[in-house]
Image 1 (cartoon, one colour):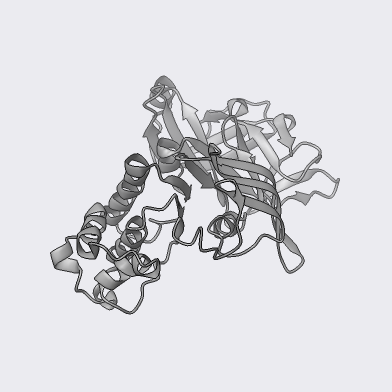
Image 2 (cartoon, rainbow, N blue to C red):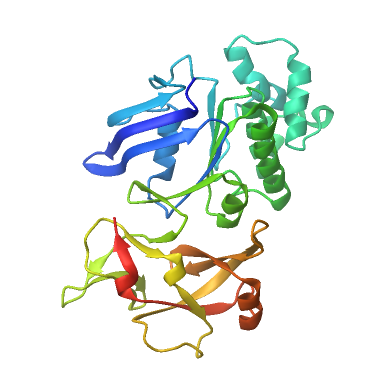
Length: 338
């Protein structure tokens, strides 16, 4: 059996005349956790729908367990499941929602015991919740019931599209915990789309970013996502609003990238000269990296974010903390294109 659960080859997808996905090759190992980030409109949700076999790509093929599968194929119907940001529940009690998928595949042995286990995985007491109607649940409870309905199937792949973006902190913690337990308990492959870069960095075996329908590794480089514009003299820039922009190198590809080790961080009013890009930004998240002791620092730049791994002494010297305004500096000639 192939070590890859998914293999994508020459996948292109269009909405009308607009190309929204352009993936030459992508392999997702069985039992892995893949974190996927990128700006709105970059193609993340479309990719998850294709991986869930909810629709067919316009071009190319997607292999699952080594086989090309069609949308809604009986072989993948309960082996792949997708949880979106907004939960969809049947207008039925919690119990019926949780066991619905098992009934569809005529797997009806010990339904009560299995439903209780699935609800317990997301922090919901079976006795207190299984008779509740769908409309008696809070937003966080509804999302947890939707998660339990997927966990009970013990799928080969669990696809999560911003699963905790619209729920309370406790529900978010429980959904995250349950998703990681699925990988640990039965080797479920997780593909997670989230704007929470700290969570993705902490839990993912592989982190990818998307921009303009294309996939990039997020190891050494950060994406400066489109749109791009040309100044009156023909120089490419990335507009940031309020007449601010990032100067780019001469355009040779579709997407601009900057190596993380080329970015310098300083405090406003205390920056060196010599950089043609000096970008006002703000720290949004900081997380200790257990593997190296550095501080994973997410910095908001207008409508997108960059994540840098900073040594503790630099964090201490600059007094960095979430909410603090900083300036990012880099040279336009350090920007590459792909």
